Image 1 (tube, rainbow, N blue to C red):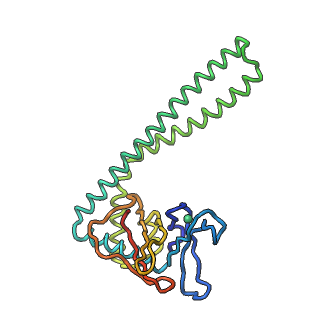
Image 2: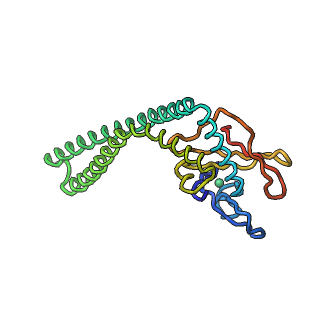
Length: 244
Ligand SMILES: [Zn+2]
């Protein structure tokens, strides 16, 4: 159920699912761009076992559910701040893009007019006029589509606020079921970034950042202990879910 959710922190490639060739019970993920396995460009494997990632995600969701239960108002506030910030950022980005497109659209109209005049006065040949005017025409059509879609997206930004409620409902459903299912995971999580294991010997740790749907990464105030597991070679790894 974690296929398509895990990404390499270093190269951004998807992690692919594998089954251990000796012990078929062990399912694991590794970077699909790792140079040794796939002749890719990623320096390290970013190995993580499927059971470990499941436990980490369970623990995080339980933490989140406890936070929601203990202080629903604070939880809703945290999400609202998060969505508000996202809305503002998104709005800024979209409006900037819209401005650029509108300016370019105007510019292309002026260029066309100039071209037309130059053609009439004989400065520009008919052939050249045909070529360039076609190019401008295509660009204007593209800009028109883009401007319409940007305007749509700007007016849809308001619905992001509703996503907060959808997210809270999905957490509630998780609380009732107390287990993970593929559809629920997809409702809650956008993607999970897997870092390379750090440290040697007994002090190994691996960072795993969960990016939730609609809200991205959130830091849950309540700490609790991290999940630790024995991985291959009988070495324990501590999984860290907080940002560096
Ligand atoms: Zn990679």
